Length: 205
Image (cartoon, rainbow, N blue to C red; front, side, top):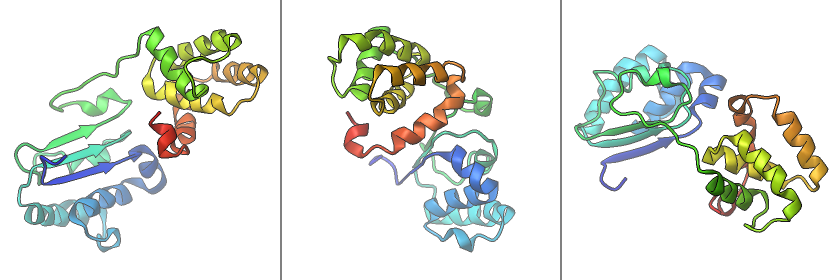
């Protein structure tokens, strides 16, 4: 980030869009970059047109690093990433999304690869048991959990943290039985809330 004149991380874009719609989300992004109050932006169109001109003047075509996390709608991308964007040469916009159709026309895309079973199991155990050597009777349940998480690192972390709160094998059994009937992407947001509730030291295990 030190290589850029401006750096910003906008997390949980999906939730922000769901709660407040494109008006608030667009204004928030523009406000963050320009350091102006969100409430000073009167409307979506005003934010798109007038604020983009202000951004060009304020940024002076600086090289910008912008990270947009968990995007699920095209609206917050259209103005910021269109041909009239205010960012200087060498700027980088990083988008994370579960909808590959939103990435049409972007420069480079990278798919998230799943971990090998042994690495997935090790990562899961760190969050589910806070140790790499849990009780052997939990091995089968742990393998069921990583199969459900499909080896995806974030899913392994949030699922492990979720099951860490279960005090018995029967509670694990019940939780995994309930989860298997719900698609992983649908339960992702619920599990992510559990992960976001952890303190920084727990998240960085």
